[in-house]
Image (cartoon, rainbow, N blue to C red; front, side):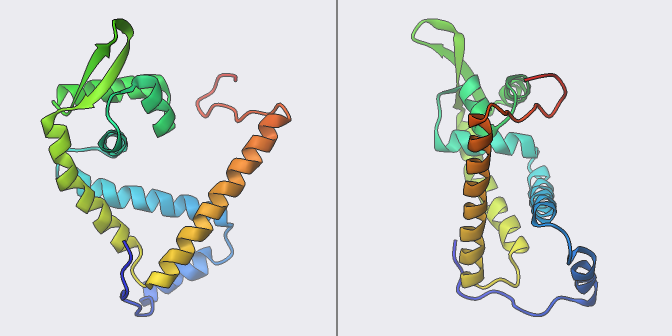
Length: 180
C-alpha cells in the first residue's frame, strides 16, 4: 500500500541514539533487528485476538491457498514438518482449521480454514498493515518503493548465493543440530 504522504519529522533525541548505536552495523544485523521488530509489533497486535505470530504465518498462507498438505505448508512457511504438525493441532483445537484426507490417500492430510479461520482475515490483516505503517513512519512513498526494490534485490542475491553453494555440493546446515 503506497501512501503519498507520511510523517517525515526528524527522529527524537532517543532515536538519534540508535543512529549512534547502530550506524556502523552490518546490513545483515540491521535487517535481522528490523525483522524481529516487525514480528514483535505484529505479535502485540495479534495477542489482543488470541492469535500467536506462529499461527499468523499459517493463516497468511491458507488465506491465499487452501487444501495444502502439511509438507507444502512446511515448505511455504520454511519450518520443519513437526513444527507445522504441532501448530496445526493447536489451530484445529481452536476451530480455525480442519484437516482431511483426499483421493483415498490417508497419509496426506490437506488443511482447510473453517468459517472462523476465514473470518479472521478481515480482523487480522488490518493489524499487519498497522504494524507495517508504524515501522515505516518517516518514509515517503518513494523511500518505501526504493526500500522494497532493494530488499527484493538482496533476497535475489542471497538465493543466487545459496544456489551456487548448493551447486558446489554445500548445503545450509539445520539450525537445530543434527546433520544434513
